[in-house]
Image (cartoon, rainbow, N blue to C red; front, top):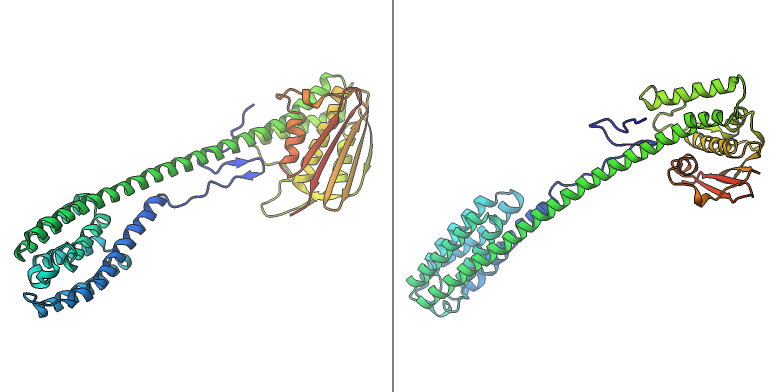
Length: 410
């Protein structure tokens, strides 16, 4: 019998209720982080360069430098560096800001003759050379390569023309080449980082999908194991007891047990929830000793004694312990007919324990085939669903002792 563990489109369902879906995070975390770096770094670079270049730019004003023009240009570039940072970081207008920066830099390069003294122009270390290099590098991180590379080459050409007009062809050629190399190198670095972020995001998306699939599969396996436990503890257990001849003649208890099994099957097939299911957030305490007495009353064919200390536990725990105890007693009927059994319930502090002991022939727990559900699922597995545990002690010729424990520790 197969029952779907979850309805298509709904959250995965585990043995005790819905399973929380995998946590969702930013769809492209690497790209988002890189975008922030590519926003903050260019803004800070342009801001520091604009402020730092102001002092050396005004320090040397020997002819043919035009001091009024120099003051105006330096003041404009300093204010622009602050405005550029605000446009990029605060107002997220990176493309217009970069276009304005390129135009100002190109204009500054073309005015090298009137802005830079002849004695400080050579060596590619003048303040205009630094201004041009900054614009070229910043463009590669803000604009896509299809626009950043032409922008960088435009600045390089403007610097070459400006240095030529200033009468220093060596500087014109040298720094033009430097600016072209800076354009290519920065564009390659930015491109590698962008590609790496895309690959990282693709890998992260694949991991999330794998995690969701694993969570769904785990929920499906848990639901299947729960169904197998229910089937084993009801229908299969009843049929086995009848088949072994443990019930003779007409038995009202057998009819009651069969009716209970049918209700369980109806629930597995999608019928109304079983009586006793608790609404979410509510905890109802059940007298476990009464549940165990009722269980023993349904097994008159079993010679069993009981020492049951009054004990109240949450309903799911009572169900798990009662079913596990019932499986242990059914095993006595199936595998040790005629054996005597005892059931003992006690509570010590926060720990509730049930012991089922019989004087049957015993068995080797390690030799039980893995496809057998009795101990593995109906005892160990069922106790695990409520945070409890089970211990099975047995050996051939020495009977069997099963101890079920659950602790109310939060």
